Image (cartoon, rainbow, N blue to C red; front, side, top):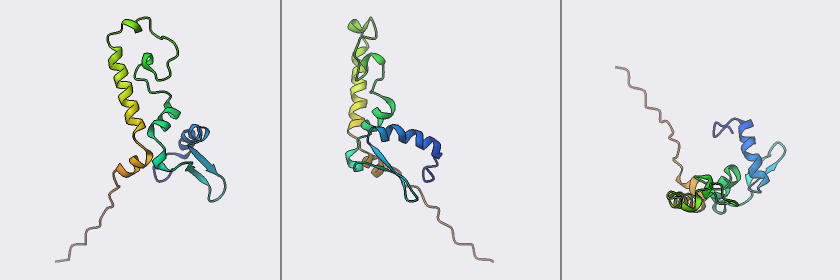
Amino acid sequence: SKASSVPMPYLEQLIGPLRRAGLVESTRGARGGYRLTRDPDAVKVGDVYRVMEGPVAPMECVSEDITEQTCPLIEGCETRPVWLRMRDAIAETLDSTTLADLIRDAPRPRTERKEPAAAAS
């Protein structure tokens, strides 16, 4: 919470679904906290996304878990192929990126260097 400037109550709201999905576990006590249940290389961003947001669906009619037709025009829809390609591209990106990738690719915080004090004239 402190390292990311995210308030602890909000962080706990985020952790709950991830814990129930088996992606993180909690440890109580003075040295307790939360940690991943798998190596970051084994956790896909898509896994986290689907736990937090549900199936990938830029439009309801192309949801990954669609079980019934949500639109009476679905069969003759001219734009549905575009939405399907978009859904598949988003899912591919999420599923081909791991948490380790995010960590590796994250910009590093810059440390401020103190300039030497100017010599008195």
